Image (cartoon, rainbow, N blue to C red; front, side, top):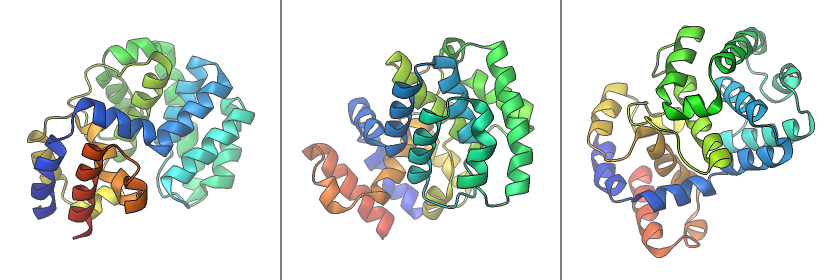
Length: 237
């Protein structure tokens, strides 16, 4: 809890433009941008992104590296049918369980896009959360469910040049990096009530600095640079 208290004021000092700037520097965002430029198929793009987000757990590499490989793989293999081969090669921890989940995930995502268009989902992102939670029988705050919403948000920004609506009540994807800050979900819930940005937009503020060296941060605009250094100091304390 002490780290979250220290982070609250710093997080609230970020403005909309600064968060957008960070998101567009995120390697996961850049990986999706590259994939979309190669696919040129909106619905397939959204389906691939959501399936991969729902399968992004117990990875054998850093998440950023995984999404870059995903982007390159599906830029060449432009079909959902290649997902099993992709998982077997690049996401093979607990492989049998993942292949079983993959079938269920693909089925749910196909049903999702039979019921909604990407624009429909973008009008209220909670529709995505509610549908996936029900279809996969997972809690609405489950890490892979809210991470799918985050990656849909990135994909939506890439395709439509704007953010989806109604994102403020969606929980932050509580992965291993954020759990190092605080592992208690209730503490996060209290923290999120006290910050001014939607939880999905906070994700990049809190985990991106963990992967940036001070030299890399020095290339950012001055006001943003100071805030990132403050966050990095708190995280490393």
